[in-house]
Length: 420
Image 1: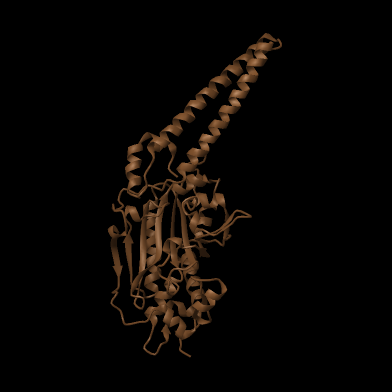
Image 2 (image 1 turned 30 degrees about the vertical axis):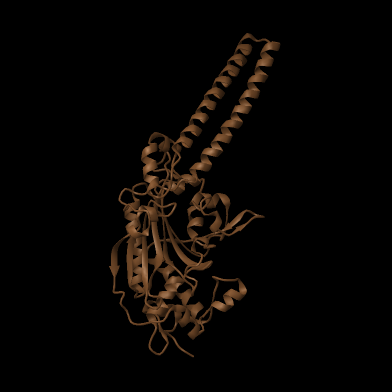
């Protein structure tokens, strides 16, 4: 969340930056709400000063208040109560509007209104690989992906993994977790999958993405669209002790999304579904330490792609393609020769202090010092089932079997998925 003070002090600056993210900042609304709030606070303070003055005068004179003074104090009390209610109402309106404003893009993010202005900054391997089949055909042939069962159980955009398919996904995610914990120094977290409204607001998913989230109205609990939501809330409302930053967390959870924005797209296979598994990296760092952390997280994610023997590329997103919470984002995409497309398997972002302001997470740089808002970063490390898609389509052999990456054999106990 951007602070009200910053918006008021440099309205045109923020309006221009937010326009790059396709958001129209209502400067007049912000100014009017702020001015009304200041006016009411000034009036309330003046009335409270008068009430305190009369009370002190009566006390100093050691007498009972007159009828006129009692009447005046009652009137002042009623006015203060009404003004305070107006202030509270204005503060709710201000907060509600601030929560709709996206994070501003970092200064080195390329300008552009849509993905056509994204920049490829790195590529590993060649995308002109051997002929393959799309994963939905491979999965059906080997009886490891069952789209019909998923639709029968839950409806469209759900699927069932069977046998070697299920075991392969478990092996991939377990391998990735071990790399992040043992090699990269993350602390593994197993969070709840249902979270409170305040937790969704803190991460930036509410109110912006309410229509794309699964919600239980009776309990007002929300199914997480990514583990980022829960990891971002680990310290909400807390002050992190000195010398504890950076904090590095990793989690494997399902992700739940309605995917309204993708209606009619990617209807074949398991690329875009309502429930999928993902390993998520999350960091809290000191302000201005996020650039180094961002580069580290990109290296951690691309290392996994290399170890899985996948062709990948790194894309720097332009301003118009940035996520709501993000200040800067790099997408990592792997090549799927059967589907003949690049699949996004990780989106690594710095959010600066946008999320920590929303959920009031602070840290103390030194003992006795004032608190600050830490910066947060997040990124998939990596997302399934798209990694599963890439492994199947890249590993397809002429006899219809799948050769899996060598790094996974320790976890699967077998090197191939064979045709029956």
